[in-house]
Image (cartoon, rainbow, N blue to C red; front, side):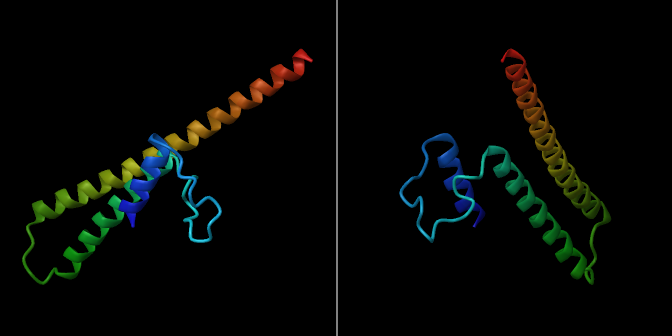
Length: 114
């Protein structure tokens, strides 16, 4: 499912808008609304989920001997993925606030001119 989202949203973001199924009932709701930053967040979210599933699988199969050094690095890598996702989300929030501030400043300038 993630591959389909990446393929279609990448095509719409970088090549051309897909207008064929504009108002069709089977058109996915994310199509045409998912920008590059949203796509980044979806991908990092999927990477974090896959990493978590691998860690849970190791935990459930803990009956066998597991090298603590390997587990440490897996957990460190997972936490790095989580931190990266949080940084991406924080950057997106800051960018939206900055964009809103610019719009407010522009509107205030326009009101002052007239």
